[in-house]
Image (cartoon, rainbow, N blue to C red):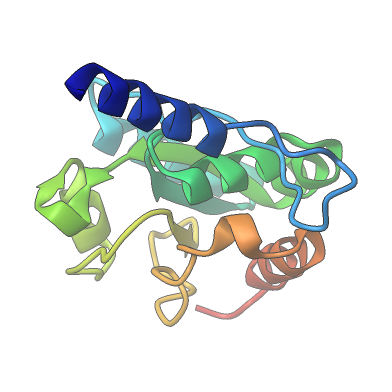
Length: 166
């Protein structure tokens, strides 16, 4: 009985991770970019230095590989369309934050550094000026639906944030 229940749970988990065909309206690419860094704060600092040198902003994506929405956003950022925008306007940093909503968060001091005391879920997208000013305090924690946003909606918001005043 327990074995049958375990098999059913495992099968359900696998079906939830099944690849969605490109013809499906809800299609989005998925990637795993939230590597555990030995010093995520140093990674952010290096991106800020690079942003100053290049006249760019920092696109700080705080998410986790367990998170469907985090992987969806990372997948879009890897596509040709987004990679051009990111290369022109941003220094991209992925930071693994674990599961902050269950009090098992990691690297949360990075969000606090930029004025966000609470990360209610994943992913979070912080757009920073080269001086470390948070440009999108009003929307940084609203990306938890990234897998259901359209490609154009995500692109348009990131393009807008590349030029928005801090």
